[in-house]
Amino acid sequence: MAASKPVMTTTTAGDCRHVPETHHFEVVPAGYIEGDVGIGQLRRAIPSHCFRPSTVRSMWFFLRDILFMVTPLAATIYLERRIDNRLAKLILRAGVYPFVVGIPATGFWVLGHEAGHGSFSQNRIVGDLFGFIAHSFLLSPFFSWRSTHARHHVYANHLSKDHNYVPPQKHEYAELFQGKVDIHEATEDAPVVLLLRVILQQVIGWPWYLLTNITAAPQAVVRPSKGWWSNSHFDPWGSLFRADEFWSIVASDVGLMGMGYMIYRAAGLYGWWAVTWGYFLPLMWVNHYIGGWPGTDIQNSTVVMLTFSPESWTFLRGALSTVDRDPGFLLRHLMHHIVDLHVVHHLFPRIPHYHAQEATDAIRPLLGKYYRQDSGPWYGALYSNFRDCQWVEPNPTATEKGRVPKVRLFICRRLLADPILPLSSRLILLVLSQRHLKDDETTQGDEAGIFWYRPGRMPRPAMIMRS
Picture 1 (cartoon, one colour):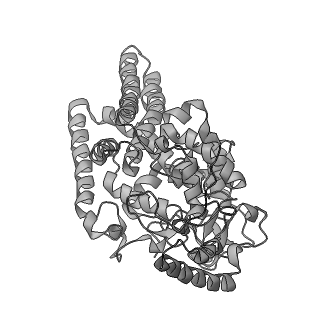
Picture 2: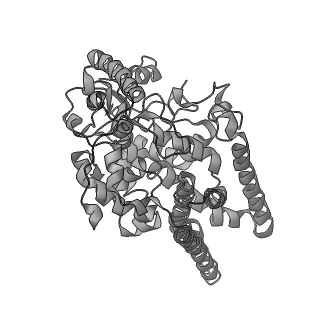
Picture 3: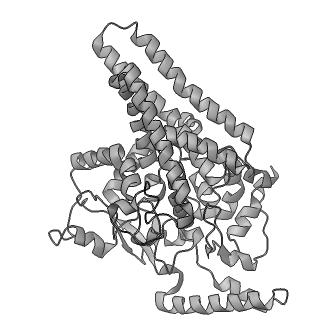
């Protein structure tokens, strides 16, 4: 393919700052990888058609996922009527069926996630409609989560503004133990304790996050918080949303109430046990996949991944501190590549999943050593994350620092002498250059403000968002 040959282009003034392709259109520092390779060069290396979603193609996946959820239900109803053994019936309904349906149901949720990014359809109304249907069906507040998830994409791995799995720094971690444990001498928890905490997080982590925004950084909110409920995805007056998002948050709540009413009516017709095994148990598998795998835990947090201070963070640093994991052929396709093509999704979230492989192949030559991929087992990564990623601290001797994208704002200074640039643009670049030159002197340049994960004992489960 022509796309396999990256096209090197010249640096432009716009490459110094970046507006991520999200719901909020916030301007952030872009950053660079090597030389003149920035976000603009990466985008231009990707074929233009990769950024154009097809409504027809997205609808095909939407209907396919519904078929993959309905077929096992019909098969289970057919089989359980022909099974006399009560234990076998229980295993079929409470074990086999929820596990099988949980996978395409997660794919259905991922399509709603794509709709929130604008990669389901070029028509925003169509995308919002189908995203709203998919997420409401799975008890996720579509517009509410779209808003906070967009900020996660804007500020991925930003210690002060990210919304997902923001780790405590050394002093914050020590405070969690109230002086009872020396964090440098503390050993890891027993394997059974780790396993129980993993299970707890996978069962209730996702709904608890929606209720409290528990894993977000303290400064991730856009309005002052009035209490733990104010940090909820269900509060249209809360701290997570701008005033102009009020009615979209209300719409999300109405969607959930409508689904709740449908569940209540179904229970009246078929009984609560039928609704439990037919809907809630598969939903728990969806919560597991969202909270642990594509939900960014093992995509954004590993022992070699990084977080950054506000002064050293750039969009490319945050987006490239993610990893692609291969879950195998079946799950790659049923979960619409949210796990195995996660890096390009963080860079360009408006690329639909069916173009993500082509886009990844196009930018990998440019990313080089900054592209991360892990073919290890999923559950092993989940377990090791709980064990090895408890807190963060700077570590200038870390062996992985050579794979950290550079701030590289001095590249923009070369543009100051470019007579083609308007005077106003050169003045803006001069201010940025001088400001970051001062930052370089006080933080020792590109290696400062980088935080690395450290192992340790797990503190008591947090109940509310850190303040």
